[in-house]
Image (tube, rainbow, N blue to C red; front, side):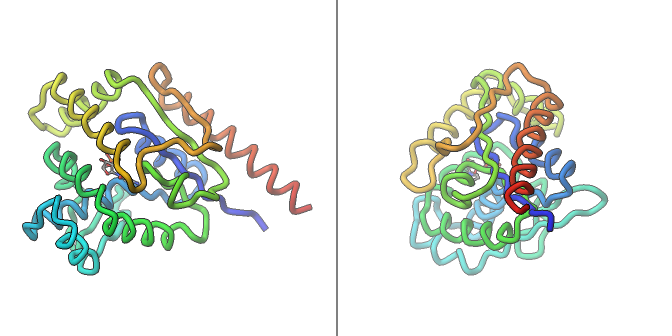
Amino acid sequence: MKKELIVAIDGPSGAGKSTLSKRLAGELGYINIDTGAMYRAFALAARNEGVDPADEAGLALLCPQVLIEFSREDGQEKVFLNGEDVTTKIRTPEISLLTSRIAACPAVRHTMVDLQRRMGAKGGVVLEGRDIGTVVFPKAEVKFFLVATPEERGRRRYEELKAKGLEVGLDQTIAEVEKRDADDSSRAEGPLLQADDAIPIDTTRMTIDEVLAEMLRVVQRVLAAEREAEI
Ligand code: DC
């Protein structure tokens, strides 16, 4: 029987995780799970309910009331918060900064990690985030850790936001990306961290297709080894 793997992609913002996770899942016929979108949807729920990001008890009370789902419509991945399509709303710079603060709350992380484990348990998934290879699925068969220079990551995020028609400055975007990464790396629970057995890829000077080809080579090698072990 063909084994369906769990593939973890971690790394700082703007390293190329989202694009590559989608492309890799598409190539393999796997499900793509954008865990950052789950934290973003939770942050939007907290803002809607007027819960302060520092109010850990308030955030914990919110956990059982938040239903986050994904669906694929016309080839587009959509994120739903309690039945409402929030795909666009969760991508603003304001929600980005808020999410980083809310993602530090242990109760929120436990709820999200539980949900991610249930979504990915059967395999045949590519999950992208910050703690997939270290906390969510430490036994994932394939782990990648994508990096790029802060300038390049800020530039990519700037182009992305501009393409969406958002008014942002390049320097401000680079500064925000660096601030978010510092916050994500320094939190006590589930920080941004490279797993010991993750394969690092520096995407600064690589095209998407080059990174994808490298990832596919690794996945095919692992699949071949798994098939060997079955014989
Ligand atoms: O990948 P992203 O930019 O959409 O992530 C949004 C925020 O959520 C980011 O500040 C890091 C946080 N996050 C996290 O703490 N753990 C994850 N597994 C994914 C994202």
